[in-house]
Amino acid sequence: MTVDATPRLIKASVVSERRQNVPERLDRAGATASLACAVHCAVMPLVITFLPLVGLAFLSDPRLEWVLFAVSAAIGITSLRLGFLEHRSWRALAVLIIGLGTLATGRVAEARALGWWAVPLVVAGGLTVALAHRVNRRLCQSCGSCGRGDDRSCLTVAATAQPHDP
Image (cartoon, rainbow, N blue to C red; front, side, top):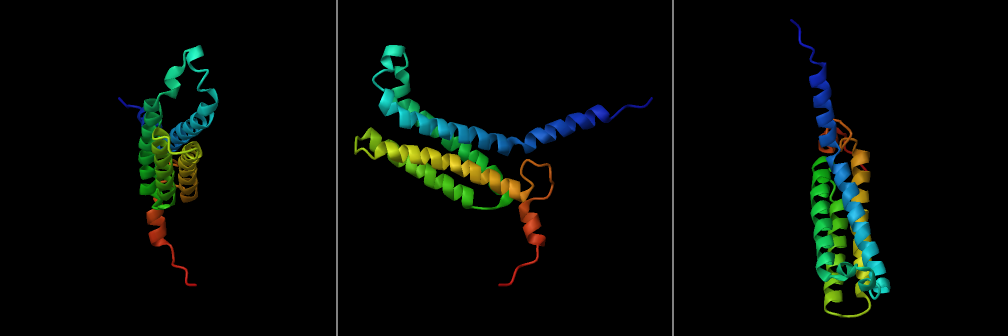
């Protein structure tokens, strides 16, 4: 009696493909959450007086804004860490840190009513966090191993490459 191993191979291939697409999916989710945060912060000063009239007063709650920040930070850190383990570039992490710092500074300034510049800081921070995900995707795509099914990492490729003398 022979057993056909094809279904197992297909199942293993699908599971492997899903695992390899996790960084890409996280980058997309993180960029979406960051852009939603930026839009929320940009539009909120314009529509805040109308929210109670349509039953959406919860959107102006500062706790929601901190939740959006926490979600963006958690997804960003997880996604960019996975990307870093493959491409070994600090660029995306640096952009993420700048974005999260700008976003947090703007949120604190807004909470303490420290001036008009709180909203632009928050919007710029959200856009910068989204940019960090974009940078991470580009690094992964140029690397060729993040989410592409290549068993070699950029670190392995870089270790075998010949150094360039200036």
